[in-house]
Length: 309
Picture 1 (cartoon, rainbow, N blue to C red):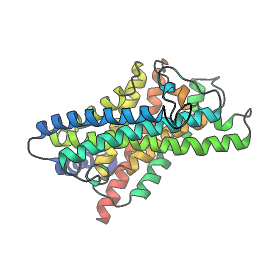
Picture 2 (cartoon, rainbow, N blue to C red; picture 1 turned 180 degrees about the horizontal axis):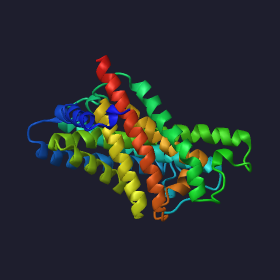
Picture 3 (tube, helix red, strand yellow; picture 1 turned 60 degrees about the vertical axis):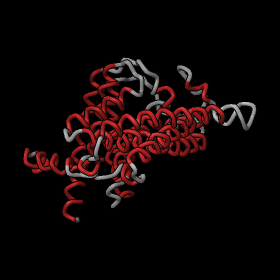
Picture 4 (cartoon, one colour; picture 1 turned 180 degrees about the vertical axis):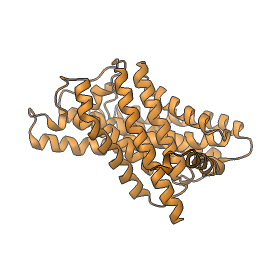
């Protein structure tokens, strides 16, 4: 542990991250022209994906296959079933848009999906499970402090005695599947495509991490400064995980755990994701603690991977 905190370790980690596939492996001629082409093609494909989603919302049944009206404004599910439908729809929408962005990047940069998602494929499932376990266990350890800081929130959906056990278990399974798809979509877009694109433009890890974190937070459209900072910090740490481990598996697992912990033990995602909730500054401190633990776990995995390679 002492070695992980030493300046020598972090200077070496920075060098290794720069030499990895998301930075050194992303270098290409005329990167700014390719960025322009990516933006133009991505806009076209994203519009096409939006049109396809709109079509699904109007065909197949009287209400359509997708109820996109739940994204028109503040939406709170009225039952656990409604919440599962909301999360599933969110996952479908995000994955469709992320796939359109990935296809645009593959065309412009003439690379297969592996160059963006798993340039170092080794240990993917194990990294996913480790990322999930670390993030979820840290959140669980900090949970009593969260409850002490914001008392009176009531039990999360999984512990709600007003719901039957079957309803809670069905809810847990449904939101886990939906949030896995949603987390994978966001990681594809930000820690996959965006990370490699910024890596082709600059070798400054500070710039790469800041761009990734700030854009990741901005896309959530939450004006609360604490929520914005917390999401930006999460995005930067998950970007660092991709840089150090060479694929998105750990970041997807950690992202899923973060969202699933909220959905199961704190509040439904449709409620927790409402922007402008005036989150207390102390909550950012707890987030910082959890992200530091995640960061150290990434470094342990990166060192282990270096020894085995």
